Amino acid sequence: MSSASSRLGYLFKHAQQRMAQLNSAALAPFDINGRELAVLLVLTDHEPPSQQEAAERLGVDRTTMVALLDGLEAKGLVTRRPQTGDRRRNVVELTPKGQQILVDATAASDEAERTLLAGLTEQQAQQLRQLLQTIVAAGG
Amino acid sequence: MSSASSRLGYLFKHAQQRMAQLNSAALAPFDINGRELAVLLVLTDHEPPSQQEAAERLGVDRTTMVALLDGLEAKGLVTRRPQTGDRRRNVVELTPKGQQILVDATAASDEAERTLLAGLTEQQAQQLRQLLQTIVAAGG
DNA sequence: TATTGTTATACTCTATAACTATA
DNA sequence: TATAGTTATAGAGTATAACAATA
Image (cartoon, rainbow over all chains, first blue to last red):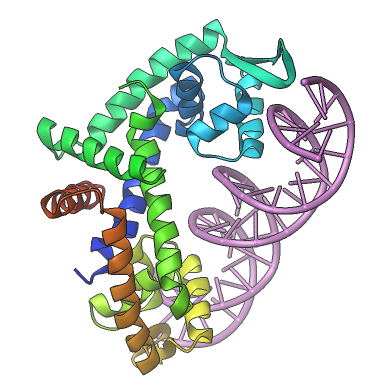
């Protein structure tokens, strides 16, 4: 238990790096990365949110969200427009192209996740997901 | 399954961020961070390794290891000396102070890990660790 | 005054390329 | 020629502070 490779920080970091690597390869055909896919997912999880709401859901600063959306908008995957009633806020929505990319990229990322979990049984994979969700949800 | 917060990339990243946060607080009294503790652990996992061997075990570039060891050496926790027989290599060893810090900091980090896993049973915590090790080990 | 989006800036972590010394 | 350590540099990813528009 006192080896570097058994500590949680090491394990989380390396698991995340490997997942990012696999996602990167799987999403390359769609010209997006894992973070951008996460943004697209956040934008469709609930109703069209403001940039700040999207940032909070993703756990990043609102200034980081600006850069992420700049990229997605340049690729024609999302649109921004002032919210009627409070023109300080931007309503961010997926374009039809963005919606299509979301569907295809999610499928590709699902396959990348299966690759990462190839050494686990289906039951173990579900356990892992549940345990992680418990930890992350508790973190606030 | 199509929400951002259920994807493995998101879960790993946020779990790692929370662990880093807890480690940072727990290790502050010892003036080291989680990465530096990992280096100390790598240096004692096996026999005194060269910088390059230590870098490979930790999964970072050798140039990154240079900077990490610069910091640890400046704090008086490790020493570097040319290896007799191949003076291109540095043998890196913990000082007595480094060994003491390692013991105390590991205990503090163990406590931080328990905090992160507070929502899980002991059995679930061990399961999580095992599943992560399986994934990371498979990744090469 | 407070909030949203934005910009400028800086900090951390990391890797690539080039250099020095050793082999 | 090849390798270990080093340095300079650059690229992600991120946050803080300050600004403009709006409330």
